[in-house]
Image (cartoon, rainbow, N blue to C red; front, side):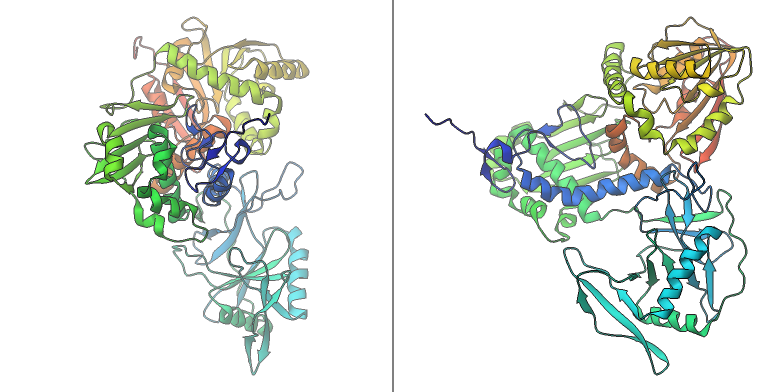
Length: 621
């Protein structure tokens, strides 16, 4: 007797097939909303469609990773090096440029894994016939750049043109000097590129006009950055005329002396596709996948499944940052989603972290759709990234969510504890690159802690700060994860330090009021479910006049970077449990601390914060 094989049907392309052809847990939107507990569809979308969706979602995730790396950096040096003093392997970044104070030229730049930027070796047309200026960040780079340029001079000038998406072959032109000018040949197709590439100027709002330059990639290849091939020819004429520009003033390495131009703006049509996909999946979540197969959804399905890029998604979706009476800004640390009837159209609205939002039309409400959907519209959903997932509400809260009760916090804390228990064995390996920067910050912070005190380190983790504990002080170190603490204990033994380790939740500390002289914490309150409550607990266990010393990444004040961080936050929270869009300085003030002082360590998104526990009692409950 033959076994019956279950057949599933994809709500997007209509494919029918067995279980192996389908995604068991289809995430609504990886790049915009992350993954919540019940934020998936089961066996409604085939794996082939998932591959299609990845084409417009993966780029956003890649941009997110780049933006995170750049955001936690700051202009601290022209040539990033690792602990051994050699150039660290850079991230894959293309459109990164630097303009220095007092210098009208724009320089090609890159970022290393430690987060420090460096200038690429490059020759720049100063403009106006004044010649070429060469920029080399370190003397060690001179031989490789000289060798590459010498090869270019001596050999035929074969340039590989930009390759359109999907094109397998390379088009190469040869630049030759004819009758006093450099002319290009007709493009020829080749299976492999030449050693020199041509790249057009990026479409970025630079303060100064970019001039032609010849720069060197991290793999040693040369590339011309120019408006067109005629500009490349003019540059070659300058090279062979041997006109070298006058010496330029030294480029400053001080923070704030450089203006960065980041290519972090995603393709708006791809963002709109993600929004449309999220709204369509929400319809399936409420009404079943069969309703998405209705002809009313034909256009949105076609938009999501198109093989070639178009602007169709942008025609249906737009950014809508303003608040309206029926869709107000409410949930500070959650997303709001809404389906409603907008003059006979099924409209989807999304607001990300009480910041910017989107609105799009998914379908016209036909009689068939009206019969099934109209009685329940509007549908309002809150998406929480603390393990709660989707939560439908009958009406939006009037203001920001009330403080969570202890049971709710304990549930959220359990999710956080399990996450750190799981990654404890390889936590240090995950953070060894950023620790190149963090290490000095930690040392400086602990250098301000005096001897012979009662000190509490909140969130000791694997013990990265133990080596800087002041001698003679009594240190209590707590963490939410026992596996993390076990690694800290082993480190304390190796260093010969006597430390009292305890498993504890920052929101419910097991110590009496006024126990400690100083509380120290580094990169902890980004992952505490209720950071204000945790800070109030720190204030409670401090003696009157005691200090709290904090290093934390926070939301930027810059409007553009602030929007990017709000957009990235669900991704960072999903990947390693950290929120990057919290205003920790304001939270310290809300927790009742006084004399709150902060200083920027990297741009304005990594800060050191110092504050005092007030002498008066009952400042806050």
